[in-house]
Length: 385
Image 1 (cartoon, rainbow, N blue to C red):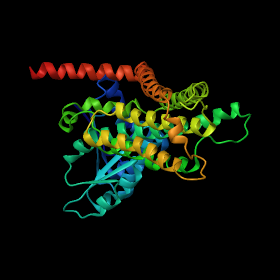
Image 2: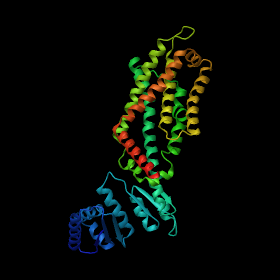
Image 3: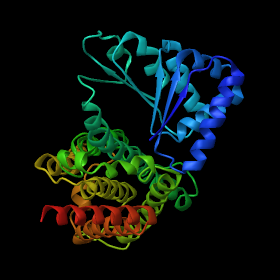
Image 4: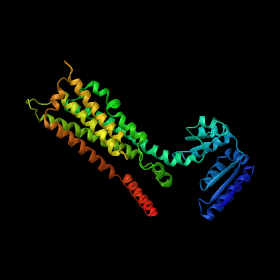
């Protein structure tokens, strides 16, 4: 390993040290076999000159380790800001255990404080607090990796389920010449995000694990999904948006034509309220099943929350349809009194979910990541034999 020591105080001599270090680095052609040691006074002089700062960062980015000796709390924060300015698209992490690390912790994107002998100042100012430095690996490669996967799914899913929810209303405007008619019941409309679709995604975002916790510590490469933005980028976002729009559009037109050209046992045709609540029910079923098939752990609670969320809609619909002189009076019995309703509901539930899953698997990024997972799992199996 090459060690480059920067200890001069005058800018001209510092530039000579930097040029010599960069030249030696180019000769060795070993970008990750270098170590840089810089004194606090030297670092202060470097930060006053933009050209020196650029050369210093070039040297540091090619090093495996950089040590800054005898630096002030302000200088620690300035080092973090230097890296943030140089790499605006990358995330920075700062970890410290004392009051002199607070500036550095707050300057980074993610601050981690170690609570211990030097007090609680760093832990209070940090985003996360751990008891020992060795817990950092667990925090990053286990909890951090899974938090990224679950939170990115949560964000995309929240847009998806709400776009899917309102798309039939907007598309119905083409059928009603944009009269402003709402096909959903007002009270059911208000309960969508809270009672009908809330708990499954909350449980997923908190408790779902792709692998056992011990597996992440043995396979640090699984952390690459966050560095490569595999599960959250503009392409992923607009793909979710597209799925919601076309699913909501097909759901509206197929539902309306299915019910309008079908009659129940009394010979009457479906009304606007019955058609609208059928579309509403299909949306609730599809978005809840979507969470279930995306989960890696089919626990008792995951399945229970999905069932309860779907049943909450039908119970609320049934109760409102039993009220006298209400807009939904008798609609539940009328809607679920003929077999076309059940056939259409099952068709939409399976067809939409399967097609949606197939399109996601066809995505190049997800397919590449699945290949990496498969390769890693096969290597793990060979090592265990």
